[in-house]
Image (cartoon, rainbow, N blue to C red; front, side, top):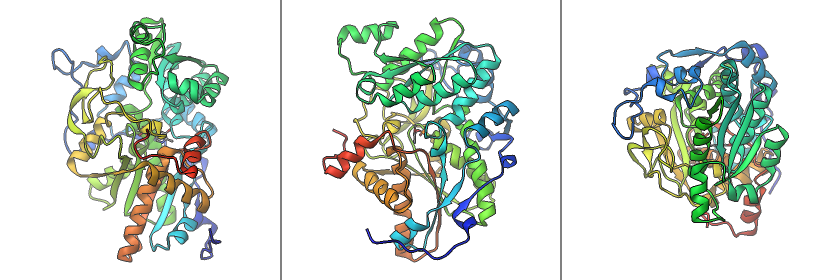
Length: 447
Ligand SMILES: *Cc1c(COP(=O)(O)O)cnc(C)c1O
């Protein structure tokens, strides 16, 4: 690649920093601002709304309250703000000047650095909140599932910080083939169990069918739920999809809004990748609130893999959140709870559904979905590594692909569009996908 020359710029135009005191004191809850009422969670048998108390064996009470909160702002406790400082918050906003120059686009591109947390993704923003509130209520352990281990390592970090135990059911193929995040979890003291396991009835059932069962996220969720409700003083924890999880992640978008003000910009587009919707929702919801109130005209683009097209091809209907049919019914864009996603490298995007709040926004047209293929996302990742110098997670490559496409469309119209995207995580533990991409053996359907 030829050397890239950019126009001289003020340092503050390239890297936009906040002071420690600028860290938000409250999260933004989009529930009261949604353009249509939030569809309640339903009991699968009676089809009646599930009362909040029914969730108490599963989640800490404070998180159940947050899940259904009518308040636009929910305060962030001081002890948790301190933990956020230690995680590296507030995170910088960067201008992608070298990427702009490479694309020869008049568009201006900005990205929010969520890769700078100790485990390399945005996921600790909610892991710390969940562990904090669980510890406040005297809960001793959290059980959860993880695919490639991004969420498991975030929760292991957070539970260790607040003195809780973590039990992580990790999909067996990943446990065997991608051991590095398992070591990260172990180092923070978490108990990591390959799923299906013989520790739960659900797990035993699948092991009886096939002693070498490769496992799936759906089975691991069912095992974690069973383990939480049958173990003493243990609750279940989920890393995406739920309202309180997306709300904790709004720390990203609230910081970004202050940074947009400092840079004197209002993005024309905000872009993020979507698995369950937590990094996208966290980044965009505060600005979507501004759009709903008529203060901005920003458009919001949600990017998913073509091979897991829940937003672009899924049906908007009530479905189970897990494969084992243990959760209540959730109204969302879904491919069906028995959908088996192909083994693409963006493991964090392999979920059959979409967060219920995001589904309302998609249905209303406020969020515009796009699907991109695997090879083109790795191409975007390579361009980003060579221009900006950062190696993105395969999930993050979807957001970058979306932003590059918008920048090229702006170039075709010769418009100085402003595009901001969420850099959800780094790819330094995902190099196998890059190896296949460089060798030319990477396929779009992940087979
Ligand atoms: C988990 C993950 C995602 C996808 O999950 P969301 O809940 O949709 O944000 C995206 N990027 C990274 C780096 C992840 O770890």
